[in-house]
Amino acid sequence: MHRLGPSLPDFPWDTIAAISQRARNHPGGICDLSVGTPVDPVPALAQAALAAAADSPGYPQVWGTPELRQTIIGYLERRWGATNLTEAGVAPTIGSKEFIAGLPLWLGLKPGDQVVIPAVAYPTYEVGARLVGAEPIPASSPDQVADLKPALVWTNSPSNPTGAVDSADQTRAWVRYARSRGAVLAADECYGEFGWTAEPVSVLDRAINHGEVDGLLAVYSLSKRSNLAGYRAGFVAGDAELVSGLVGLRKHLGLMTSQPVQAAMVALLNDSDHVTEQRHRYAQRRHWLIPALTQAGFEIADSQAGLYLWASRHEPGRQTAAWLAERGILVAPGDFYGPAGTDWVRIALTATDERITTAVQRLAAA
Image (tube, rainbow, N blue to C red; front, side, top):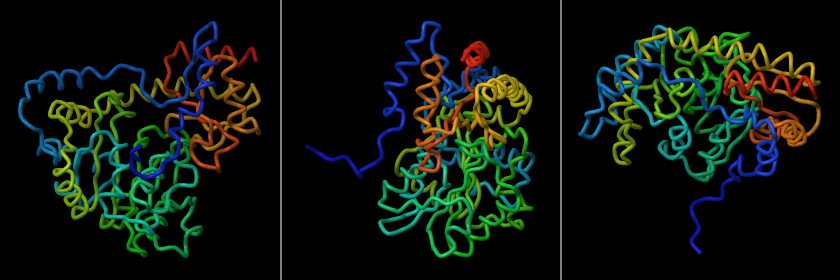
């Protein structure tokens, strides 16, 4: 029997098949609050741009079109205070997950190298490290890894799953830490447009990095801000030497964002109205869910930004997930995101208004 690659953890959602089936068996149907996949419409301007570029018979550029590269730079300067970005320092990706998983490989990491990841973390940071035999090291602050010299440091603010937001001082501390050790700092900032009780900051902000992006990469996705998960549209920006080197590797692998998707990205990154509209949708769902969960005995922690609520009934998260599944509500157990999340569940805002209000009614009757 052939062995495929390194040993990886079980795919998280495969481990809750029985809980998922219990929720699906509810007579009123499932309220699936487990996965952060958008359910609202793709903005019309993206659909129009995609259709207009549909006659694209040639291969797209791995580096992205000049128009897209300039659009990415303009967006990052306007929205995130970026400075000193050049066209060599930005590139589209096929969503963000493939880039996150592949980065340790493309940086040349190997067994014995260390990768710092958040203490409660999106599983793909660990998966990417293990694919090359590197050691993932969970940490919530630079002080916890002060005696290490990692090759790669991942930060994630706003956090998936907790919704926690790193302050400007915390972000600066991670930048100082990575630079002092010669590590690449890769910041996953995909949820940045949705700050609720705290405003996210970017590692690209001149106030964070002193106007220099050396050693820094910021990863973005249009999946959340623009309901574009089905298009697989993301980008990376930062250190021009790093990005251009990564583009060179991606050329060999054929990792190209399709030309029509690049056109849709240009339209969406030049528009903020659709983001404001989507913020209103998520804010309303959040407004409905928080009091319902609190009244049902849940504690909600962090949840300052992003598309999730981090909640606990002070019991193992899988027990909480089973309790909710009995009521037809499916959530993600917190242990998906590391041992520190064991007593928590992640509850997504990415369900229709009807499903969210139905979940609220079921919680009220619990």
